[in-house]
Image (cartoon, rainbow, N blue to C red):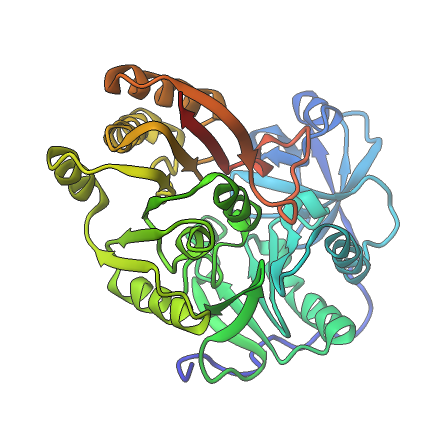
Length: 402
């Protein structure tokens, strides 16, 4: 990880704390807060006074009444992200500690998990993933970028980590006029780290891997899929082998497919590290492979579809729907009676209802009757706030050919 710069977090600001600027909302903005959503759009901000980029501000309604504290962005359409409904100073370290206490209750048999999930942990625009004694941080707005020294200090004090990596390479940072970069904030890493997940040993590349290293959000879905799968299984878009390695425990043979050679190399190392020898990894385009297997009348007992997000914006939903229907239709043609289909979507703009309708249409076209076994979502360390639909993004549906 020689390309990462060490100990680059800026020093804390010394001296007197700055005055907190007032930001006045329109009636529409105040009503949005009252509905339970923590975001205020720029069109609903009436005045910002002398608020600085990433500063904590006091949010006021049109009558000047205090509504709470928020991080202020000078560039994003999301101008305010609420931190608190009280005037007391927000202790980011205590909120990180509270997030860890929650994870201790709901994470089992894994040393890798999402420690902080942004708004769902009342730390808006902040992601922190734990990989054993290493942490990956994503500050996705000006407020959390400015608060990074405080966040790093809290992680140091609470966990004494071996390393803290900033994976600030997400595209949303461009909307905040922040640099997209990967750098070392604390400690040192010589390469990927090994973690355990559901009893398996997995390699996580914290600097260049998918997401922040591995797919933490599917952790519980891996186990659910393995409960139903048996016989011959096909894992599509396997990446570093998450579903495939779990299916190997209950299936006679697993074929794992992905178009990324580096990801498959990691998947093979993961299989070797766990003594798994019943998984065949194949580099191929999944759409082409499913089509050729259908023509060849191949048959599988279980198929997993876990593609990357097809709809990254609302305008892409229609095209994404065609893509999801295509892969589900092709997969269903490879499943016989009793066959298991695990189909996923990580597109926030693709709702569960839309995905169910797409799979239903595919089943009719394929001449298959499907029984819904489970309707699942992201792992519990990615909690969902009832009044914040943006915190729900992953759908995982397990079905059986009746």
